[in-house]
Length: 286
Image 1 (tube, rainbow, N blue to C red):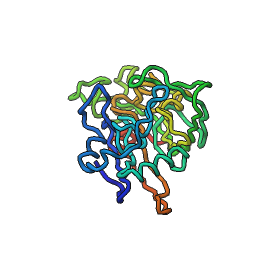
Image 2 (cartoon, rainbow, N blue to C red):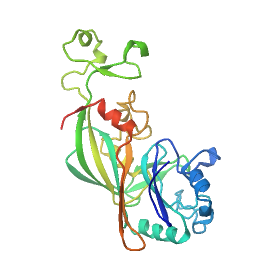
Image 3 (tube, one colour):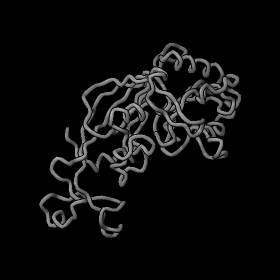
Image 4 (cartoon, rainbow, N blue to C red):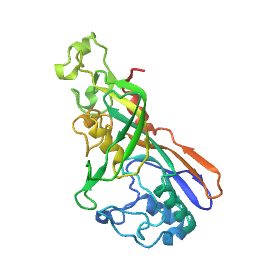
């Protein structure tokens, strides 16, 4: 676990993809951010207000089974996460999140070509039961606002797996094929990118103005531009890069907040190597 910032009150970590913030009831004992934090900072075991309970199946900061945790990232989302090391810091951070006085930014690769700037303002609600719930746009739901800026446009060029990895259009490492080459012309039609049929993608910077569960994923999916690699929302387009992208392309890249002593803290995290490699396999159109 990489620590990006730490003082006597808080620690900001760079969470790797695949690691949950805390274990689900069905995976008790699973390695998580919380298990790491409890081992490194045993004093946080009692940090957190008494349980506030569940509201419509929604976890709230203050659950005694999740000490020091004031916000979450999905298991397959990488990036910055702040933890409270004492009760005073927990109370302070909780108020920052409730009053939306903390800035959270992400980077995501979404399907299709996006405008340079936009705001998705659609209320969201949970469906299903806790632990296996989904989120959907619902006029009766809670206000949810996502702002985004397009950073770079990409397209998918013809690729083929090396014969040693199975050949054809299977999974594995990829190398580009030039149109007009003997290898390209020998491909079946399913392996070619035809005129007008090129898949396009946009790398976006995303700023959350609210912090709902799965907000980024559901909002972009509702606009027909799902986050690539998302296996819950936006299929089949979200799976267009499944051969080279094993998880959702979503990274918490920036946190900005004011510390209790009134100084401002800004922490940034660049894209991890697995996501950089995905972009390297695409053709930039910018």
